[in-house]
Amino acid sequence: MYSTLPKVLHPIAGKPMLQHVVDTARTLSPACLVIVYGHGGEMVREAILGEDIHWVLQEKQLGTGHAVREALPALDASLPILALYGDVPLIRRETLASLVANALKSPAGMGILTAEAINPKGYGRIKRDEKGEIRAIVEEKDASETERSIREINTGIMLIPAGYARDWLAGLKNHNAQGEYYLTDLVAMANHAGISVRAIEVGEFQESEGANDKAQLAALERYYQLRLAKALLAQGVHLFDPARLDVRGSLACGQNVTIDVGCVFEGEVTLEDNVSIGPYCVIRNTSIAAGARIAAFSHIDGAIVGTDSVIGPYARLRPGAVTASSAHVGNFVEIKNTRLGEGSKANHLSYLGDAEIGAGVNIGAGVITCNYDGENKHKTVIEDRAFIGSDCQLVAPVTVGAGATVGAGTTLRRDAPAESMTAMKERAQISLSGWKRVKKGASG
Image 1 (tube, one colour):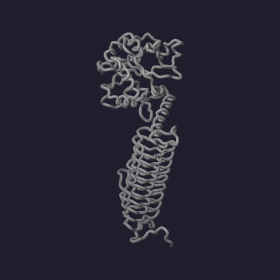
Image 2 (tube, rainbow, N blue to C red; image 1 turned 30 degrees about the horizontal axis):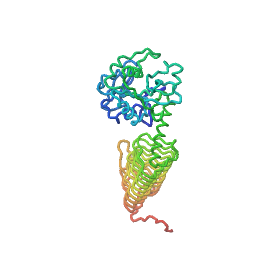
Image 3 (cartoon, rainbow, N blue to C red; image 1 turned 90 degrees about the horizontal axis):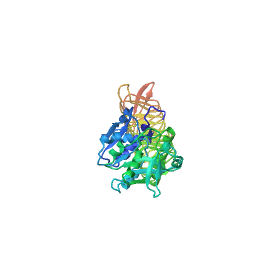
Image 4 (cartoon, one colour; image 1 turned 90 degrees about the vertical axis):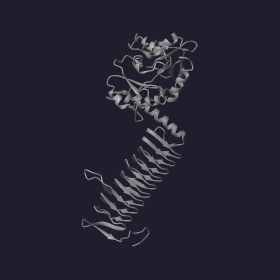
């Protein structure tokens, strides 16, 4: 990987490969979950959390058989062992459940997961007899030319029958090109003991692929994303291009949802009915209510977007941002820890932080809530129907009363009375009581 990050911590869809494997294993409700790690694996232990995990240090890297042997003291000898791999992240729960169920059809049955590879290079080959029974798995470096022509390969994933693991693992030899103890040698031992070896073939080859370099990691990322895209399409989500979608977490969609190209969804995201997401948006840990429209290049993180709201293009909603129904947040507007009331609008080039904004409020271009004094954050309150002119600075804590107008270019340091015009006069703030705002359609 040419990286200081341990291989199994490289991410697929924003989550370490090993975490994918652990999460899938947990869905099978294992009696015991063991992770075998090598020297320098402290970073892995810090990254993969869970009180159900037993960590086993493999002092010497002597192969897969040796790794499982090291795990034996933490395992129940009366139960079968399912061996998985931290760099094979996309194996499905359904595949593993089928492997286990198929193996356990026979008393003390053994199960292996195979795949048909177009290019089997690098994989162990499955050797079958004339009856089709599996007799051995031959690693490529130990295989003959004839054996290398076999396209059925071993994925490495294996169910070892209860009661046999300790004796079989103790009997492994390292007389091979690698000088390692191969877990695959257990197949020959099972045959010798008269134990049935049952195999199932993985549905899609990529499901059982590992990642040993960045190219393989990228290929698995695309496979995973396309798998998610197909599931969304099956639910009725309109994806403009399934190949240009990234989900790094969970994405729940209602009916008639449309998602344009290049969008990234992180954490837990919910899109309710009739939501439209424009191109190249990044949305993280956010709930977007029915009928909302998110225009291109918007970034939304930790927010709640109300019904029929219009966000963007180039808008940024930071954690704690909430828009009520039919609110508008336009281009180059940033909102943080602020509620924007029903039908309120901030359409151009503004920053609204730590504010409570009522219904029907208009925020002009270049407006800033000055919420931070260098030590503490302070709140700005803008009540219903207020109008804030362009290029205003609202120095918190400050309140703009209901129906008030704040003239363009005002630096507001004191509360603005309701139903009044507040503006700057020779750098002084003045308020005109009873001032009436011009109505739409009025002349003069």
